[in-house]
Image 1 (tube, one colour):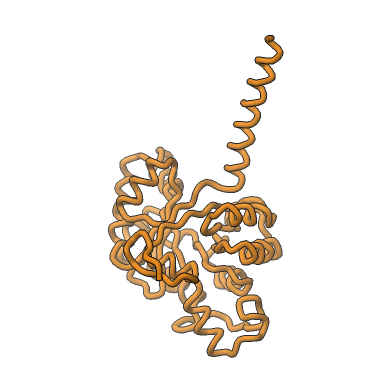
Image 2 (image 1 turned 60 degrees about the vertical axis):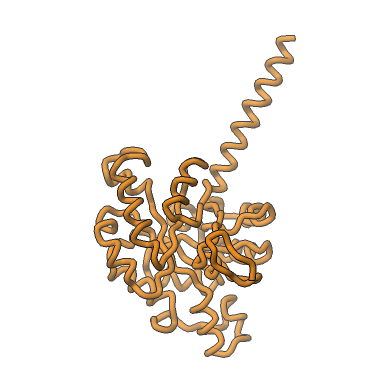
Amino acid sequence: MPPDPMGASVPATATFRQRFLSGERLYGSFLKVPATQPAEILGAIGFDFVVVDEEHSPFSRETTDRIILACRAWGIASVVRVQSADPAALLSVLDCGADGVLVPHVSSAATARAVVAACRYRPGRRGFAPTTRAGGFGAAAMDVHIAAEDARVTVIAMIEDPEAIDRIDEILAVEGLDGVFIGRGDLAAAYGGMGLGAAEVRVATAKVIAAARPRHRVAVLPGSPEDAAELAGQGASAFILSSDQGFLRSAALAALDRFRGGLGAAKAR
């Protein structure tokens, strides 16, 4: 098994959850466009995972299902930011074969326990349906399917509310929770609309990473390479870099500026 950047060892064919839990440095992106091609492109160029953003983008169950299938085809992990902690929302994407879920507004241990219970068979209350993509469309025996899914599914809580910061130790004590994503934008808005570098957000971020370090992993959305380096130094290991929309917008702006400048210079001559 090759060593990962954090010093642990992971199998050569490790699942996303194994890589995440080992502390391997992982790079992903939000997907906002309800189509398969963004996931395929990101997989082809070497991203480790995508986050299908059902919470803030116009995804249906069918489009999410297709994107998860595209991720499998291109060897990139699929995590879904579900609309809510509703067990039905979680079960839907897990049955489609998502590698994990990113659950918004987990602000108490009770919510974290309910999320874990909905995502795990043992211990838990996940609905059993082996005739899905996750179950090999009926190919896996019950005990095999249950064990495989409990080992495969990654459960990540979004910490994005001030009350979640106050209760972070209780939330992280919930068995079966794999990690947290720090929603610094939501925290900034809750703390009065200040930027990501505001003192309250910086203190909250450091508190969450320090609390998570012994047993859990931390995902973040960095604002710059320097911001990412600082967060990595504190202990974050999964980095969500912009979104498909963000990449499209920045590349389109750069191309437009470049060609406007070039054609403007040609006209001047």
